[in-house]
Image (tube, rainbow, N blue to C red; front, side):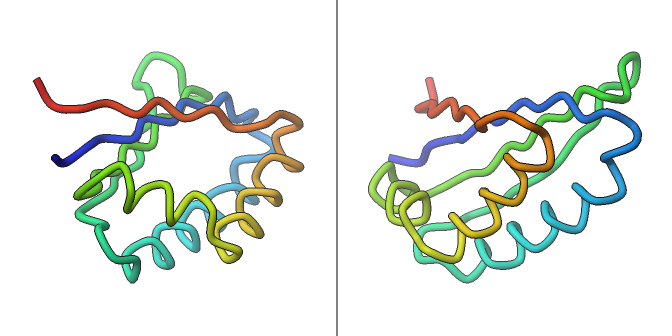
Length: 95
């Protein structure tokens, strides 16, 4: 069953220029992973520091394999260090 991963981050304006390339690198690597379907990054119109990343995976197992991968963890550690907090993930089934 397909799932959606939802990640919400607060990104101060002064860190945005360093974050966006990391998000692009993460998505680029994710697209090559078994089970990856799609992804998008959105910014709140009323609050430009509020970002949401939504990715779609074929299964929880595919997501967990990506979550545990060394390549993803290296980029994720850079994101967490830049923003000063650990990223939290919401995993959702359809329906």
